[in-house]
Image (tube, rainbow, N blue to C red; front, side):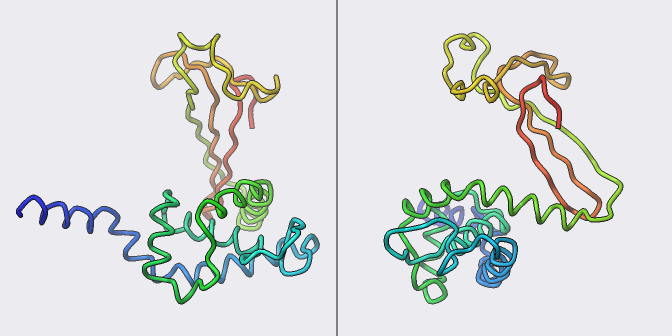
Length: 199
């Protein structure tokens, strides 16, 4: 009985910040939805679609993007958890909610649009800014011993991972480098590159 009580408390305290911000999710969604429509106004097809569909989906492309950004804005990195919370607490706000797998597939297809939206938002935030903070971190793809056998991301020469050196860890790695650039206003840009290229 005691263990069950402890587990129940731990589950409730697992994501305290998310429990606090979930009530703002619908407001965030509405803002991101308006921003998405504004940024892609010249590309939008009928029913707020960015790509053609044989049948009109329950959620438009703009709504898929807004939902994905809303989850990120409150720190949710698990789609399973996100959709459980939507169904349990915000079902009345998202009456046309689709299956999580369908959402995941469409979000991946819309990745170029999400990237473009992030870049445009960062550009607006950084307008007139002349002070930036830059940092980078290695993103290993596998152990060095498996470098020759690894087939990850080797479809094209330009995007293939490479061997690099981490001055902080004082060791070599095989993979990419994630470059982060942020301004004093909070605009953030991220770029994933090999060691031989710079942002």
